[in-house]
Image 1 (spheres, one colour):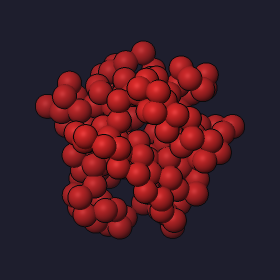
Image 2 (cartoon, rainbow, N blue to C red; image 1 turned 90 degrees about the vertical axis):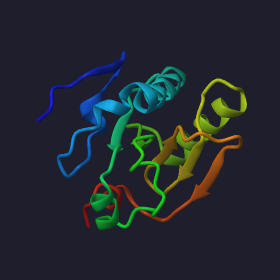
Image 3 (spheres, rainbow, N blue to C red; image 1 turned 180 degrees about the horizontal axis):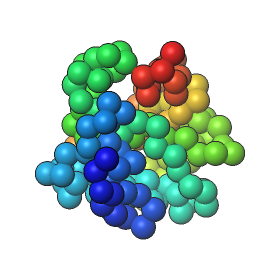
Length: 143
């Protein structure tokens, strides 16, 4: 297992490694993972609770295996599927959306799912938003 690299106060690189055992690409930590973690720190500060990373970076093979989107930001190392214990996915999504509308969080994509929220930092002039029916178990390669 790779040695964790502290990215921000509450997040390390190992939390974002692929569930197939592949480490988060070190070359992307500064340009992709740090901005994602900074955005997640803003969310954590706003909700006052820890955030659990269900899925971060994915290899192309792993992304295909779990049925991820063909142009997934997970494959680019810019995305996280998250949950916050004690809050519904809908509440987390609403808080992220409000933070974005207030200019407090720099994100490019926000997805609403039944039991997790997708947040990404893709370069984008306008926030990409969508909803889906995948469950947390499917996003990490389970059932």
